Amino acid sequence: MTASISTSIITCLKTFNRFIADIRDLNNERPGTLLLQPWQDELGRLRMWAANIGAHQTNQSSLDYRLRDSSHIQQQIRKLLDKLLDRLREAKRAMLEDEAEDDDVESLEPSSSEDDETTSNIHQYQRSVATIINCLFQMSMLVRKPAQHDFRLGSREADVAVFEPYDYNHVRDKYPKAADDVVSRLVRGITRRRKYLKYRERHALKLKQGISEADLDAPMNDNTTSGRVLSETVATDVEDLNVKSDDQASESGILQTSYASTLMSGGNITIPPPPQSSEGGAPFECPYCYVIITAQNSRSWNRHLFNDLQPYL
Image (cartoon, rainbow, N blue to C red):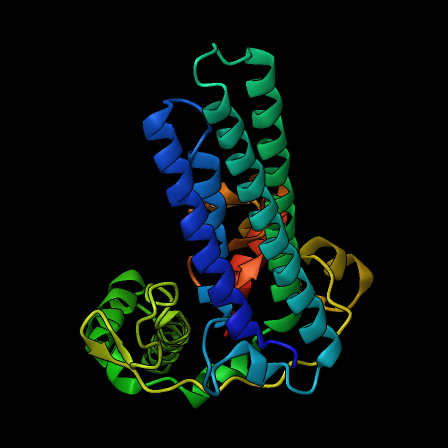
């Protein structure tokens, strides 16, 4: 029987953690043998991918449930996870074999050329693991294309009600001569944006539940995060779309959104820069909508950010 995505990702996380522990033990015995940080970085990226998309979940918020009618995508993700597991096991095998050879000739000074060859092999495995995780991030962009209207299903007035008086005062102070109905409409727009961003934050927290315990054999279906009880998320079905990167989608006509040139160039507003992890066009988690995206340049990042904020009424 084919393993589920949740079973595969948990196995990968456990294997990855044990491999990093082995590297740490080896470096304690023979300092500087292998670089630990690149492997820790890749484990962090894998955990981010799993948490962002709910790959470790086993309920109706799981990736398995979302892809129940998209077997081709489900199969491809399982293949990537199987390949990742193979690379981790091969890297560990290579490391242990080198360690065993050193033990056999412990009375002799180890050859630096042999050490360099082993380090090079392990580095190749690390690059292969990084490539596989990049592919998983790309696959997640096929799965997660949330619609703006979806947040109304899970948004809560209580999340933003406390801000309404401040929003009203802010708009009134900024536009003292504006009519009351205009002020009210602007305030409603700000409230709507707050609701959307809070919904995306809560949704991300629900998907992340249990990721810290996924590789420690602890219960994963508790709905508690940082002392807060969160309701269960029900994943929506994935649509079979020909998803392209942000810049390609705009140029192909799949999604056309027009923004004022003054806003796109910055104008009198400050646009926060993308995370450092976006360098080189690498997939990353947007810190505002918590969706895995790519931003090839500042224009594509600005376009995504304005899509999150929906600045026009």
